[in-house]
Image 1 (tube, rainbow, N blue to C red):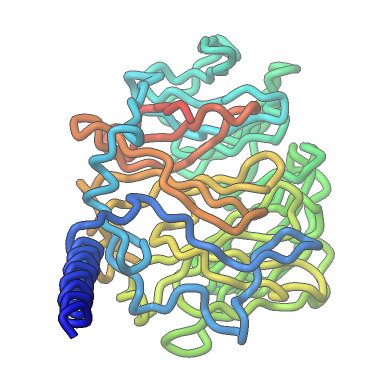
Image 2: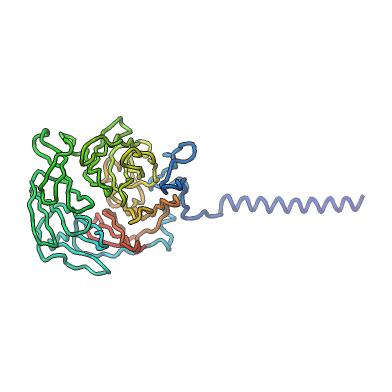
Length: 409
């Protein structure tokens, strides 16, 4: 009996110790164990095309109530991420004057117009040089051909000219033309013709010098709902957005030769987009009530009968004009406001003074991750993003200053 009592006491003591250890572990796990600062968010990948598809059961990848103001999923601590030393980047200013029309040419050079000097420059291998000594004062908008040999200049008074850097020739285009885009051959342009009479407003295509003009689609009074952007694939020259209800829009691709192209239904309003490098899909941003009318970034097929086959949220609160595809369209880089006020999709000015963080979305693995924040004294609002040919450098225009800047990836 005495031995049994001794064994019983030992068992009670051992059991007590086990309980204490378990409770200590549970308390540590619940209150003190830190979670990773950056967690990749997984989406299902189609093994054939490499494009994300909707999660199992057709659910949204991230539900609206899981989104915080920074565009991350619930549970991700953005302030903690921003303080992570390994993510801090230094922005390097490449100009000390405002720039326009920043575009990466097919030859790998970054081309831009300097508003201060009125000249065009090429940035390549760490050096800027004049493309031409010709001065163009007070240019309002710049559209490059893909190879960087030609440029369309739009002026505040409505005058438009095409300048060819190879031949050094200048050609005038009609004042009624605006919002230009070159095709993938660099020989033809698409544009809007906008007059005081809606009946005379059209989407047109022509040779780059204005010859061979043809009327593609009547604009009427819908000019603000049409985005001219010639697809790299060649057929689609523009998109037209039309409201279905307060929460949705229907986007109609417009082909250069007319005809019906399957439309895309988007969950939101304020549609704006840009093409992938091959022109087979788009990334676009919209806003709706579920996001607090903040812009959300999405990916969708565009063109032919497959339009809308993929149409998914990328779970970032930002605009498509703050993003860029890599040359192989396998990744997207974005500038994302570190906080996003409600209604910012309708009133983008609400984000003025809010610093951007930088994200990478991998369309092959279906993950996204924060890749950088800038020092507090270098906070920028980035737009017009371009990626170097080797993928090591991200170029952008800081909306606060208008300067061309870069960060190393």
